[in-house]
Length: 386
Image (cartoon, rainbow, N blue to C red; front, top):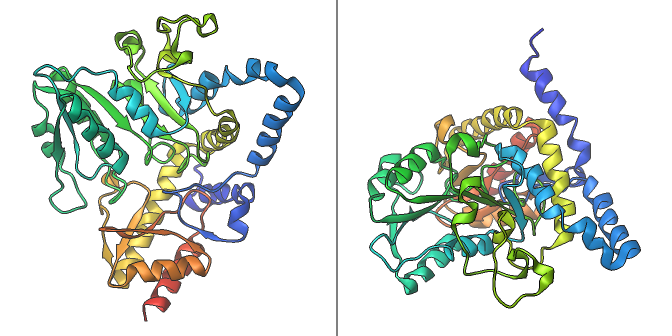
C-alpha cells in the first residue's frame, strides 16, 4: 500500500520531540543554524567522560573520529570510506585547498560566482598576490545564475573553480554536474561547497566526479558549529602537497621529524589538531538526517517552500528566490520596504528567521516544521507590516 503524503509527513513530525528548541520557538532559520538534537547533550557528556577517565589516552578514541565521523557525513554524499576528513571550518579548508595550487603559470585563472559566500571571495582574492587571476561570474538579476554564464567563463587558462552548490543569498541551485564536466574538459579542478545543500538536497560525489567538496554541519545537518568536512576524490589524494599544513599531515606525526613527509591518505589535508567536542555533537545530527532520509526531506521542503511562496504572493511580497523547484534549495527569501525592521520584530516575538542585504527575510522550514508554523509566521509578518 502506497503511503499517503499526509502519513509520510506525519512520520517526519514524530522527530519534533528530538529537538528541544521547537518547544519554545517557531524555528525557521535552518539555513543558518539547524536545531540542536537532544542527543547532543549525552554525546557531549560522552566526550567529557572519555577525557575525564582516559586522560591523554583519550586520543586513542578521539583521533580515529577525524575519518570515522567523516565517513558518517560522507555517507550522505556517497563518498568512499576514508575520503572525507573533519576539520573546524570551511575558511580553513578552502585555505588548505588554495595552498595546493601554483598560480605562477598561464593556467592561473580562478572562476566562481560573484554571489558566492564572502569567505570564498576573501580567500581566493588573496591568492591574487601569488598570481591568481580572479574571474567573477555575475548574476543577471541577483537571484539566478544561468549555467551557461559559468560555462562560458571556464577555459584552458582556468585552474580551479570554487563554487557554491546553492547560493546563500538567493537559494539558487547550480548545475554542478555541467560545471564540473566543463571544468574537467579544460583540465581545471572544482571545489564544490555544499554548506547550503547537504542534508536537504541529494549530493552524490561519485556520480558528479567532483574533485573536492567542502561544507559545514551548522545548517541542514543539525550538527552545530566547529565540524566542517572535506572530501577529496581518492585518485587525487596524493597529487597535491598543501602549503598550509601541520604536524598531523605528516606520514608519521609522532616521529616529530623536521622535514615534511606527507601522509599518503586524506590526512595529508588535515594540518593541526582537530576540535573533538564538535565531532561528538555533529555526529548526532548526521545520524538523524540519515535516518530521516534526504529524499523525504527534499520532498517536504519543496512542498513547504512552495506553500510559503504562495502565501507571500497573496501578501504581495517580493520573492527573491527561484520559483523553479529544480533550482530552489530549502530557503524562501522575502523582501519589502522595512523588511529589516520587521525581521527584528519577528525574532523578538519568537520567530527565528534572519535578514540579509539584497535578499530580505530568509525563512527555511526543515523536516520537523509544521504547516501551522508557516501560516503563523506569515500571519505575524503581515501584522507587523501594517
